[in-house]
Image 1: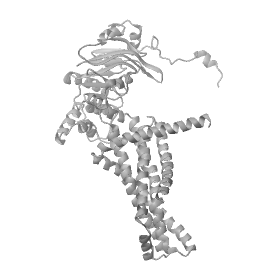
Image 2: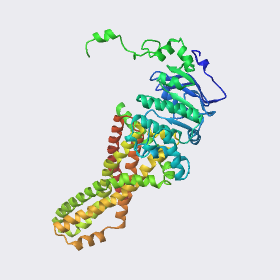
Image 3: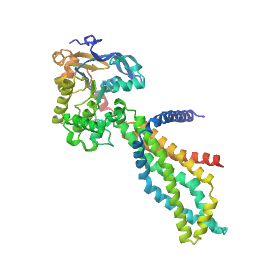
Image 4: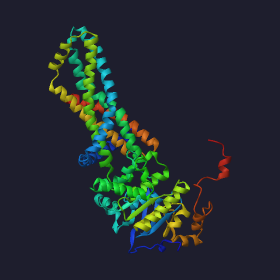
Length: 278
Length: 253
């Protein structure tokens, strides 16, 4: 592990997602300034970083929801920024994404949510769709909840349904946006195991964006640590755990003091307390 | 013109232009959406059938008021037998399409805006995009078409019940001759009058549905943003309905 971007396995022939020297700003505020990330075929790639480092923005770049200001975002060997809508949709059909809040369609039940992509993209007969959906729901342990509406599900259940929906089309790439946030220990353990199982059993290339260091480190094959718009460290979880870089150490141990600022920039604390109210 | 006025006009033009562009995209999405009648029928039910009670009640009371006011006015000229004609003309050409559109905006338009806005706020539209499903086709177009079809049908119901309300008051309560009421109505109302009402209801249905869907689709994904978008739907729909009513009335003269 090196503490620089040169450590990333750029240009690897088995790279499914290749983000190279990407710059992106919102309203003039830079989110990424020279970001390099590679997700290799069949591996779980973790993207970690403090809140507000643009992890979700990275996923939006990869799925073609937004375009980079400069640099290359390549998925399945094609520059996402140059794809026209039909090509972009064809690319997305090879991907699955798990949203932070599940993003289930609230006007249809669990079964129909999982069946949704199948109905939209195929002409499979109803009995086959039923089998397919029940198989995926069984995989996430929610076959018995097929008739429930999304509003009747707990957060963890909703995320498992969303996971079933994400894998129903047998994608080559699965993208997870903060899959462990706000889950109770049991749901967290189940989701964690599912992420690993999906990867092992289906040989899916996985990209997991998370700031839950311990959880993600237990399943990731390769990790990137983002801070202030670029990769500050990368390597296997074991390599990151051994790192003596102050930034990596602060993030891995959850320290408030260190190179990564915890406090939002503000005036002098004592001076502000002594000020008379406006 | 002050700087603030200029900025206001620029913003108005910008929003009008964006709505126009959205309308073009929406029309493009309507063609494939027509192949999914189930989605459209579900929206006709949501926006139309669920508005029936309010439309029927409003139509009845409007007709009853027309019966009272019309009788009072016509009685001064000794022409109470023309009550049916007056009520039918008022309902078919003006009150039916306009009031239905305003009620539809308040009942179904706001529901459309807040539903789509919440879908945006809860990432449902983004999830569709990522699943390679165009939300314009799956969400926006069926709702627009549902509104477009529902408003003329609701207008017809409003007119029918309204006329019955006028008859109830004029004939049953105030003693206008039953046969005269209906025969005068039948002979005075021309196809042109009915057409005017139908054209208005279609235009109002399109405009109110477009505004509702557009506001929801572009609502800021926050509780406050969805609330503001819902308010804008009612205000813009009402103003546009009344403005277009004037223009269409003038065009049919």
